[in-house]
Length: 105
Length: 229
Image 1 (cartoon, each protein chain N blue to C red):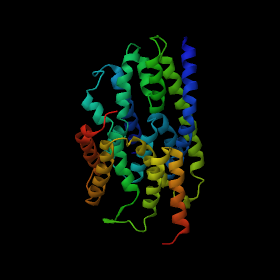
Image 2: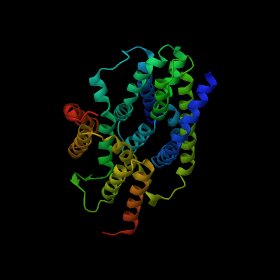
Image 3: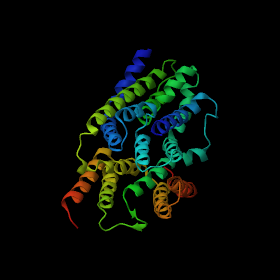
């Protein structure tokens, strides 16, 4: 199952990068397609973030004691200010570790 | 310029970007082991898929027991921007042999594209220009493999209390926020995020893809309100 998934993802990734170069499809996508494509990565990654911040647990909202949510908000602020991947990860992770290991709300 | 000079220039221009790429590769390697992949699976994924964000998406979906269909569709969606990169390269690479186009298509990642397209657009036509992309692509490939291996070797030895799984959403936050540059992109993020809360709460299958569709549609509809730069 894992190998099948990895190989299928490898094939789809390669095809996405190769098909326009292969000349099989029209070289220049329409402005509508170009416009739509730019939204796809953020539209797919945002739901994954929302899920990983554990805002929903057991079919109800989990906000007050949710250290992941607080750390996520800090990471968003750092990302807005710094636009730096390492700073965002470090400060977000640092917030989460401090809250989850040293604070008892 | 000769083949070698183009290649060397590609390598040298790509090297500074590895300051950001290398730690990301190490994080991926650590996360892959933490997510339950074997060292061989974790390492080979970096050459089979060869895409930073998409490999992390794979880990997240794999560890949450998603179906193969969801994993493949999500990876395809995350990497869809490469279709546009490739389309914009046809002008410079379209006359190459099939073998070259296969190799360069495989190496066409964000960081290699960003450096080489600038070179292609500013350089007079030259039949060896593609060696620049070969240089940027191979540099990134080697850096990604070495950093992944470093992370894989570190992975098993880190204590549980570190909760390293949480690096995944933080990485995505770091990737997405710089993309939010307009009214429509902000609505895409808000729309797909709120939809995810609703669809996940309703325990709907394919909630990631459905939420993404809502976000994309919001972006398309509201893009006309963006201020043109």
